[in-house]
Length: 153
Image (cartoon, helix red, strand yellow):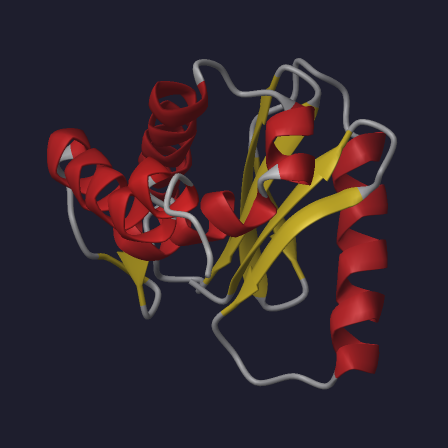
């Protein structure tokens, strides 16, 4: 996997994860071109397309497009399953997959992605284990109420 882009139907980029080293200028160019290409496709068209020397696999959930760029020899169906599993994890954590959840909780969306994928590869296939790791991290991050009830002298 080269990169993942999550964007709205209006073409606004909501989340991006790059697994290759590119300049910011090149990333912006790729993003702009790819978003336009995917949004121009009709809903009944297949979710795979040849683009440059890569295969693009995308899926639309509600108002968001989840898009991955993979190598020519990689399996498109496995990539679709990766996208779907990530959406399931987001839905389980946030209650649904909503563009606003990603906008206002993008750090959590990145964290979920990093727990699921590591270095382009699926790190954990079990939704239960990924969500358990996220819940444990949440416990470490959230301040405990007893610290706020202690008077300051």
